[in-house]
Length: 186
Image (cartoon, rainbow, N blue to C red; front, side):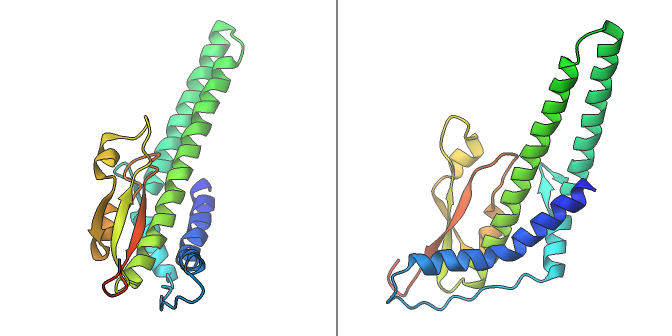
């Protein structure tokens, strides 16, 4: 049930992303600047194929949700037994519930980032004649992982953008940005 609700929201977000990126780019350009960008229409079968192949830390998204659900149930049952046997307040049970809530929130945030980035890369590839490269930008702070820090500010051909599309791991905050080419002007 949870995966169906999450899937529907991600599906809608993914289909809307290319149009949103188009509006952001067009609105950022000067009024007198004319550029012909096209917006890819992500067909239902394309989005469903993405959903079925979406992975989180090496596991398919639905498998990850099932694992999260099982771990949450196991943790809640274990803490409930412990509270009953030791006659403790339900504080430990509340802590187990909070861990489950935090895990679900992290998973949802990562999945949303995956959906947005998939839509953006589709848009960039549709307009590869004007968007020649993508720039990998990491959110640099003390939480940045070594992999993302090493890829920060590297560029890749638009055709290869899907290989470097964040999120690269859970809670990844990296993004790909378009590098435009207008003739000899970059």
